Image (tube, rainbow, N blue to C red; front, side, top):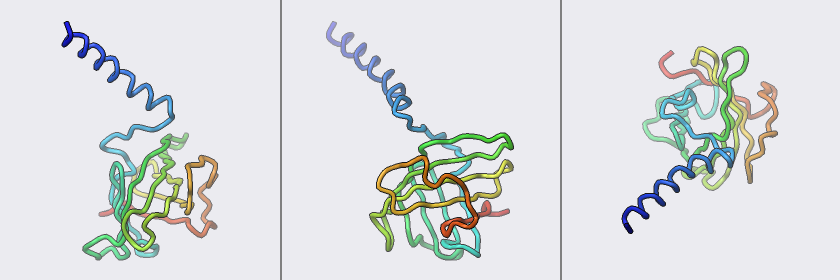
Length: 151
């Protein structure tokens, strides 16, 4: 009887975990997120960024064998616009590199065909604010464009 009670309570708790996560408004990423790829652009800094679920690694130069910065990154929100572009709000913290400890947030747009990423970064960011930045402004000093690696 004791074992049956423990199993029922455990099952009930497991059912509430996804509901609680959704209620808090946190996005649960898929393993194949469109954002989670290798992006590059020789005309920006860093020239290469490798994004994966839960984090990223930045390389000053595309040819660098080891990352010069890395950190954790959480997808806060994801949506698709009327043109099929995929948008992300992310919040992260630099854990390795010259800016270790700095928190930031980013608004990113992946083109409908998945080969172009535009972003604007706000740093430092002490907590997530979905209103900052409000748009992808090419005039913003942190505006960057990346291309899907290998295209």
